Amino acid sequence: MNKKLLATAASTLMVTAVMAQDVIVAKKAAYDVGKLTASSRAWNHVKGTAVILYPQTTIRMNDKKAHMANKVVHAKKATVKALYDGKKIAFLLEWPDGTKSVQKGYQSDVYGDGFAVQFPVHYDHPKTLPYIGMGSEGRPVIIHLKKAVQAVFEPNGDGDVGMQQNVLSKPYFGDAIGKYQDEVAKRAVKNYRRAFISEGFRSMTEIKDGSETFSADMKYTGKGWRGAVTRPLRDIYLNLDNGAFPVAFAAWDGARLNRDGLKLLSSWVPVRLEGKTGGEALIKELTADPKGDIANGKALVEQNGCTGCHYIPGMSMPSFMAPGLANIGGYSTAAYLKESLVDPSAVVVPGYNRNAHPNTPWYSVADGKRQSAMPPYPLDEKSLNDMVAYLKTLKAEVK
Image (cartoon, rainbow, N blue to C red):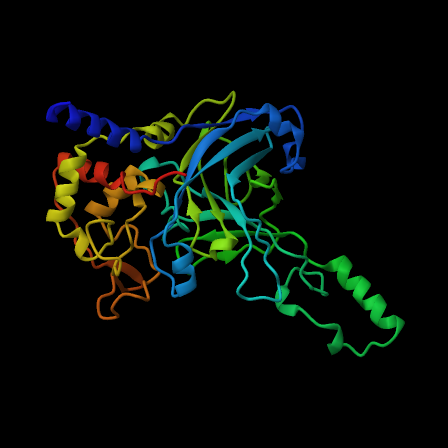
């Protein structure tokens, strides 16, 4: 094969690697989907959509064991199914995991497998969706989290694990001890599920006032997990009762010491409600293939000094100052990447990399607003598209 044909073949492979996400179609159901669980047979009649979960590598954690456990991590191919009944919507996420990990309340270094489903509060402008990790300032997200846990010893019955008490701390004897332990067993937290609202790192706040109602459960199959989430189409935080809306998924692997920001994460994926119209602009934005010259984009990334602050595999050292870009092409949209180049302060990832030099933070705070240390790049449209096309190739191999 001559050099020209080789170059064409390589270019084709690269373009294939950056193809955008398919649309999840939520099938209309004639029954209450709010009662669905991960084991419900109804899911057998729903077509699944492939969603890729990429290692989130924005910030390094101060945990040597976790770094070693995640030194080589591949992306995972998950499957998503969706159903709605006009009032509620249900999602089923299926992802591979060869080890079943359950979080134990009495061990602080044991982590459970888990998953999350995330929705942007506002999505009228598809080019300015929230940062995919935990939302961003002025662009909040709602997160539904479910973890695999043992029954938590929690005698007050309020789901507040901070109020855990041991029977030895009680003035009970004989039959009274037995009655107390029976009551504890009845009130133990067996299903760890939480709802949060968030506008970025360190802003995630649990919704405890009952205003966000949802259900979630998990089932291990021997090869992986099935996780289901059901919630209203409309509530005080979200309105998903439209032709289309974005959703993102995350999964934690307890065997790899995953927790917090150390997880697998999808990009924003469009969901269309079967039988409804609208949302074409959103779907077009999230499913469009990146347009640009990947080779020139890589050259521009090098010329503009991106590797001086960001970690890019094969181009810079792992000890990075600004957010790592190793998998940025997997869980970021093209619009987010373009915005980050022309207006770096529009969305500033606020979690500081503790392994970076303290004299070189990637942002400052002025009048309560974060300002990126990265300068805006006055690039022409072609150069921007080329750089975005290259950045979209930065993602782990799927296995």
